[in-house]
Image 1 (cartoon, rainbow, N blue to C red):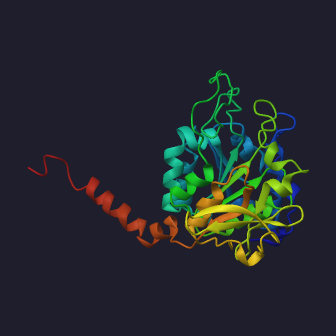
Image 2 (image 1 turned 135 degrees about the horizontal axis):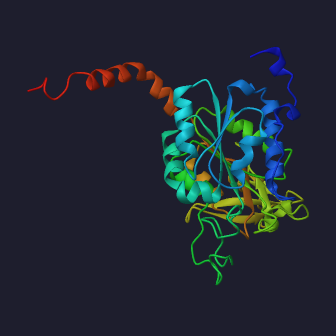
Image 3 (image 1 turned 90 degrees about the vertical axis):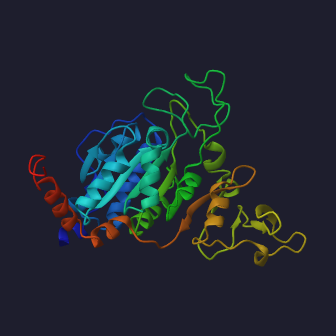
Length: 334
């Protein structure tokens, strides 16, 4: 890496392409966070690749001054896997949406997660299909009215983080598009992880699903509706830091408690352990009246697929396949 790379600012990671999203779209904020994350990590543009599928989010590779590949619907994880296996030195990012990644792309996403390929997967979740004009998506809430569900959606929604955990993901996190202080660090934590880093980003679609996350992200109430988790720290939240989450050992469910009431102290609260899959699942599934969990929900060490692939000497495997293909035609074997 050259000294010039070390001096790059966030603006240096922005391409010369005109950014084309609807005014007010949360994608602008995410793009800004990506530029900041790359600058903070001193990422080498010549060693960085963004791969996307189809959807509003998938335009992002055009707006980053790195290598990029705008692929086909739902197949970005598969193509990104090929990129990583072909050149393990590359820093590979996957950009997808809740529709692209969890509907037609659900199968590809599942296998990238379970294999633990060294990719950074950013899922922009706006709970709607934005590019194709507002149909309900796999993450849309029950009752969502849309062109494809005029009477309200009857489908139970998918939780992206719970899906990732169920697929065996080794790094699962959640952030918010407008969180310019916390989101870049979250992206770089995924980047630093040896394996698949999956980050769900709550993103506002200003046209087709405006303010769907307002009950979670509104600045006036965010302290009461979000809980920012940290490994080794008790689960405390609230504007006055007077609320917490306690685990009921009988039901293995979380419950909201108020510090100082009935003798409850921080010692009674559940301490976040990134390595414990049950805690990750409990946090990923929190919904109102519970606060929504933000930050790194789960992180554990496991062999990365691309590392294992290299250790099995793919060059020798290709040589063996070539020998099989050229060992003679059918007449030679008679």
